[in-house]
Length: 299
Image (cartoon, rainbow, N blue to C red; front, top):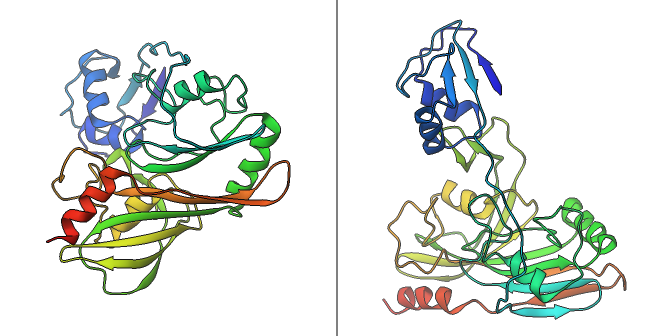
């Protein structure tokens, strides 16, 4: 049970207040209100209820859906593997690890089937997972097969000593050949499921980009990251008015098709946990990405 006390003249709708002050999405809040998991002064109210000083909101967490992470046969694109690491080229639409409501078909399910040796530092549902990319972002991920390798790799991501390069197709023609976006990222105050450039409860975020090719309505760019914030590239490019093409959340444009956003983790480099030598990996952009680029190129 969670309790929130209104100590000033809030004069905000209940659903608006909860969206801004909890991690629940607006749709989740509406469902919890309907199921009477959220009460005001011990009474069920509508989402349009206007809060006032002295009101007490009680939130009862709904029962957590039981999760499991089971091995599943999956056609993984393994770029490299040894006794310590697996480098995989993740396909479009594949979620990295299980979560409530999505227990199967994730990269973790495929990894559990592929290998009996994965690190367990991140728990039962994230075995081997050192870092993540979005479901509809394609490209390279390094997986740890033991805890020693995991800790060594994780320290490089934390200290920003690894190398990551992305390719993206973004809307609009970028006039500068290169650029740096230095803008802090935190939760979007109006939609807690999204991230945004904000000064409130945010962390520093720095993205560098270089123009590779310009089209009539879009630009192909490569990007390198100094930080690794959630949705960083998508948020930063949207912030400067050049959202990633086909991005269903930050795109601000209609989707060209359902093939996924045009963002690909192309290069990945790091110090190997055992040999202590620098290793780097490259990957080709997937067909779904190339097909959309070709449409702009041929206009």
